[in-house]
Length: 220
Image (cartoon, rainbow, N blue to C red; front, side, top):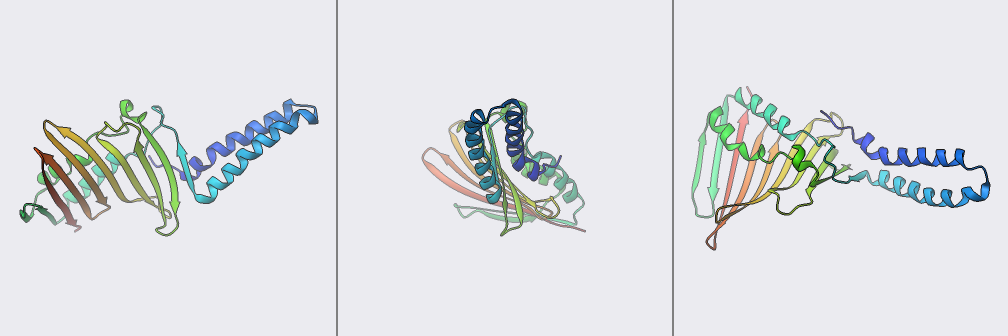
């Protein structure tokens, strides 16, 4: 499923213009038209400014569908399965380091954080707010999802789409959660056809350890 940012940006304005036309037909006296025109004109100005900045924010809605990032990750893993080389690199603040080639099974295991807590699941959708904007500098449409509930693991997701092809360029995810007596703060990033990165800060018993891992592959 591919969202059409133009439709998202113009939906509110189209609805307002329709309401305005209906008001014009229903009211026969000019004096009664004066106040609605003023009010709706203010909305038109807001819509115009919104289109100029290329940004739109929609309220959380459990019936809406967000960008299917898990489908994107799944398709990326299928592509990586056929890669001739997959490299895993790890380091942490305790000076532990590792770099090695891995197979598809290990790749899927390391990619699990990207599939957890899917915000498209109906029970979760209503806790997120979607915004869409166009970045002329990077030539990207960005679909941004921010949690309205600080207790949820996934706090934000940004999906960058190429403005020419509508294909995903990168995905960024912020996650915060607690398991037992351990607190996790994660920054996840996936670059299309290249690989993914995870920076993870772990706090347990007053101690902190920052882990950084990357998984990169080369296409045949």
